[in-house]
Image (cartoon, rainbow, N blue to C red; front, side):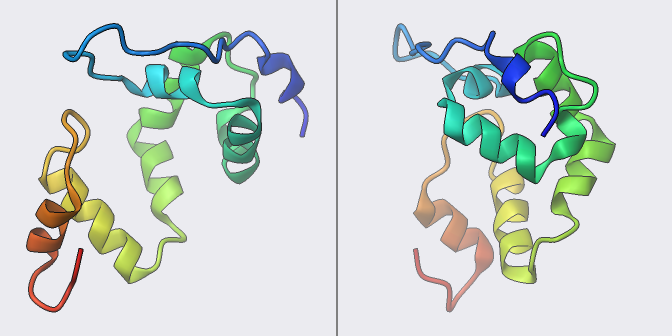
Length: 111
């Protein structure tokens, strides 16, 4: 894929410095190893064209509503239900455990 090799600017050694660290999408992208980043860009080529200048641009591009909708198009109903439960639980700002997701999904779904 054109542009993947040019994303070598992303450092892979970022780690939380204290327990209050709450990673952003850009932080998460920075934490990806090369293979994971390549897999992401192969699965979502719209994120790589044009080549983003840095992880903040890539994160912004990935977070716009049209991009989020595009990434959900091929989800099956179970995956979409789990994603919805994560959003309801606020997983975009705090860690959410399996038990909380299972509770949101309802009876018959085990963690």
